[in-house]
Image (cartoon, rainbow, N blue to C red; front, side):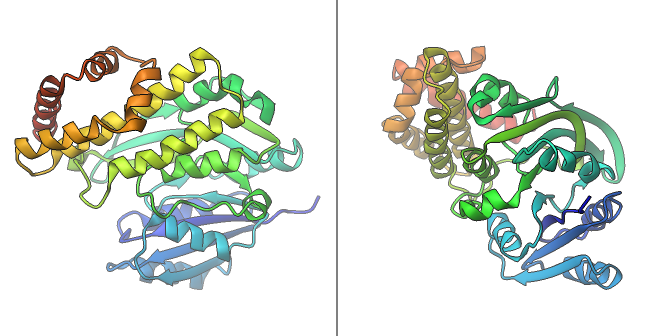
Length: 343
């Protein structure tokens, strides 16, 4: 049996603390016909040195450097430079199990699937000390055609099988033929859009309940607030349009599905508003900003059609429909205070 080349792409930016763990997890794969593409995205620490150190030790490693342009740009550069028939993405502080490729690859060439999706373990550390983990995985194994995706879409979404690009093995032919790239105008949820773009062009997908990917979280730093470089509303609008387009493509048009899709979108817009209230600006400015957001047509369409999944969102939806700007502003303000205090 011919061994298929698998490319693993790691975008690298100031990752010296955990980068070696990520690289070693790739080099320890029991499946050996791999290509590791390390894309140094303008690191200012020792990351590039670490990349070159490992490239000297293993000829399967390719190191690329570019000016700092963001994770989407780095991944896109990795895709351009990749030679593999199949491709995976790994973040520079995460790891994969040694049997990941060996066990996933047969699904793509034996089952003729275009993508294999698997579970993730969210591993929480305090410094170098492992504390606990939380696994998210699908309850059963599936091999389904593109026409059947709609039957499992929401369960896959809830199990984190759609929103990350890292818990997947992709057929690179689909990516190249359809010119699929990461949206460089997005700085959050760009993975989700990439996955939806890919799945629009699939004929068959495999879903496995096995957990192979380990997502690193350092709880020493507590919860992160708003990233000032991100326009959350603009990012979520891009995803809004993509989600609606994808739902149309896979025929998620019934009333229940419409309510669920708009509920997801509504939650994203709420997140954008919450992030805006974490900004270090006066309450009056935040209040006026909320008044403007409440006029947004896309948000109001989501509010009208949404069937929220929890009581908090149901209450917020009611207040938005009632145009209760003062009450909403007070709720978001109190919530931002609690988050800034780490409550």
